[in-house]
Amino acid sequence: MTDLSILSASVLLTIAVILSLAGWGRLTGRALKIVVPWAQAPTLGMATVLPLGGLLACFEIAYPPSIYALLFVGLLASVGAALRHSGNNGFPRLSALSCVSAVMVIINLIFYHNPTAFNPQDDLLKYFNYPTILAETGTLAPGPFDSLGSETLGGMTILHSFTATILGSRSLLLFDSVIAYACCLAQIIWLTKRVGLGHWIRWGIVLLFGIADPMLVNISPMYTTSSLLLLSVSIPVIDPKYSASSWIAVALLSVIYAAMVVIKTSAALYVPFHFTALFIICLWPERKHQASLIQKAIRLISAIPISCFVASPWFLLYAVFNS
View 1: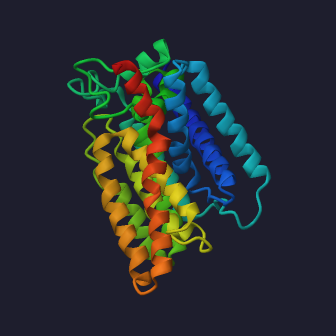
View 2 (view 1 turned 60 degrees about the vertical axis):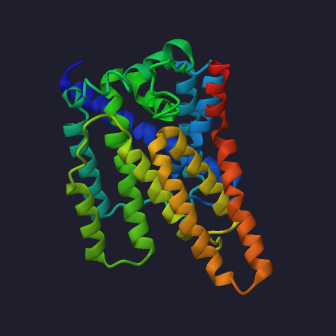
């Protein structure tokens, strides 16, 4: 393939994956009986497909056809959600800021989706072989000198497979540096508008995010985890009807927490800090109302076992191979 054809295929695949993830995010919203804004839907979709990918790996059927099926179902869900579109469901509208953001994504694709950007001392030993192992065996089996099960539980491999099964290993940078980058921008634009920031402040935040040096030294999921982090802090403003301590918010947080843990174990360090801050913020106003305090505390604490349940396919995967 020529450079131009690779670039064209990468653009089309980026759009397809984002739409597919958005479809999974909207499906999750329907299951919880809430309307997930399109800006948040792809990131929620990331978190949703990870336990599904873990189940496929557990049953040793995570071959390329299974990955294609995940993509196809997400695309169908996205099309269905678009057809059911109504004026108040957060469907993105074209604006100057969104157009500039699209240009920033394309620039990122041109400069960072590049085989020369790989780090042979890190990527070739870790990130490169996992999608290949998954495609050939349908699962991930940790070795005695492997980082699987310690530095990562393998969740990022499922996301990498969305591009690697179609464009090969040269596309491993595509997910984090382009797709997840676009998800971050979409959330920043939506969140800054939702909280009522001024026009020029919103432009400044988006441009600062765009010009910041990401210092990409390997295929580590920097933008992927950042996108999940943004989703976790935006949950209280997705729908004013639901507080940060509602069961809906707890369910969403559980899915996000589980995703961060299975993508990269170092990202799991964010979870206790966010949970503690949320716990204090939600319970402090109820400190004089014991009944309400206990009720909210129980709901928030339940996020811990629910997160473990959502991540359990990946835990079981290593339990099976280590038994």
